[in-house]
Image (cartoon, rainbow, N blue to C red; front, side, top):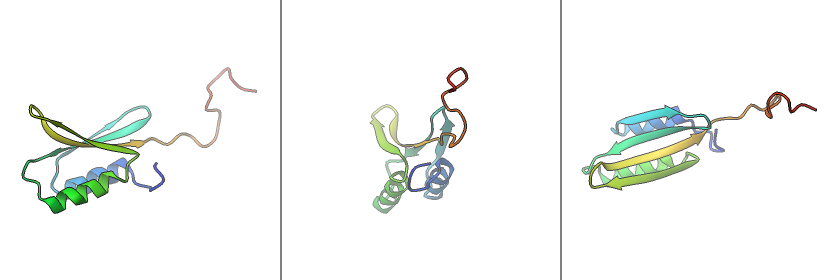
Amino acid sequence: MPASGASAEDIAARLSALGLTTRVERHTNHTSIEAEVPDSLPAETWREALEVVAEADRFGLQASSLTGRTLWAAVRRTVPATGDVRGPGHQR
């Protein structure tokens, strides 16, 4: 989890509470959240949405005349704190 302690599920839930439709995808090293942003989104809601995604490890906005606007965020998945993270055959 990032230093802020925000999780991908929390970010997605908060964006949904703002009225945005979200998609969450889990990948090997991170979890991504995407939200379609309608043209009619009020400025105050924009500000709140940006505050939410700013808690992620990375975030941005993809805009296209063909696909519209998609707000995205990525949260790193945690790495095991104990054990051999180098894999078998690399033990001392």
